[in-house]
Length: 556
Image (tube, rainbow, N blue to C red; front, side, top):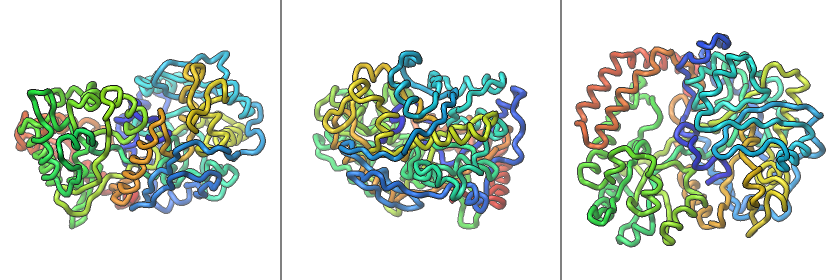
């Protein structure tokens, strides 16, 4: 829904995580990544010293302003059309003629690198040459270890935080520039568009008290996902989406299910079903202060029992029970299911286009955040950014400053002249203004691809896609309400180097959870799997996190 990566294949791993946990020694095995001086974790005092001062931009006014919520959360500002007179936020040319190689993921066709009018126009405006080297997003992370092993890292590299564990990024930081002297505190004032990125977005780019990462797709209202419904189907069945508790959700099952007609109420609702039961991230603290893993929480048993109850009642689509996730979107579009769990990035004009093609009455909505027991409702707040880029330490100080000046241009806010160029190219060639919004031309669709945005991005906004203005209004209203219920989980936004021996102990629990929630195994099988998890290292892992909490706090 925002200006970010939307429904790309990255959703499963990106913005839903509340902190970056490192476990796998993969990079170290390549023989080229030195060990970090600490576990990656940063306490509150050192974090404040490393973070840039936040100075919101006043260059552009949104049609629907951001709404302030709980825990530092805020909804994304929304635009119904691109400002008629875009503001200019950067004076002069930021670059000094330098040339830099980059590496970023791309889902889709790789655009031509030579003769690309879009690349040429952006580089001209930057006053430097960024040699974009997009790589297939489906296996992007798998290609990174070879770069470290070869010692041939690009000048500017995107590393998503959900891959930190696989790459053991905490052991590779010596390859990258410490940005703290350039951007911490008031130093960021030299780069106003970077200063416009909220502090929470920078937090997960801080390692061992030092700032390394430049945030991409930052947001103060990042929710991994929630429960969605087809409003048109609920209206046709004569039922309301007003949920006061979990029993109200169950009550939707019978009127929305008709197996003989190939319609079921529910698709797989996991893991978003956990939120109504108060399950946020992996760890919480009980009344005595003891750390409790989500597996040990009584609420997990409740959530699994409820999911199994839906399955046994025949309210869940058979393909969902078979874990056929590839067709979940088609099931929702075609009306074979009326309720699904999914990422919030999938609620946008692209979704509306696909859904209305299947049924002109298609109307996706999200349930308001609710509590299973009718008490205080909550939804897990994701980190301020889940994607970060890093500058190669081989760059000289002059080159680093040039790259930061370029980053300041790339981070120009939505509604600015710079944003139009970076995201849509040259007007008339790459895009035209249609209905008040930029729309890519045939040439633009071939040449313009997400690349610069994975080097650094401005704060996210909610914007119109494919002319579906009402979708923007609906999403903005839901998010403005949801941020009131935002919950920062324990160890929010903290980079924690988890000992490698615990990397796989959760797998057998997760496999059992799947069987239990689909009604194939009893809840006792889950309890047994949790006992095994404790014996295989779960109790020791708890002690590890208790030490982290005692030394560094919880990031909340």
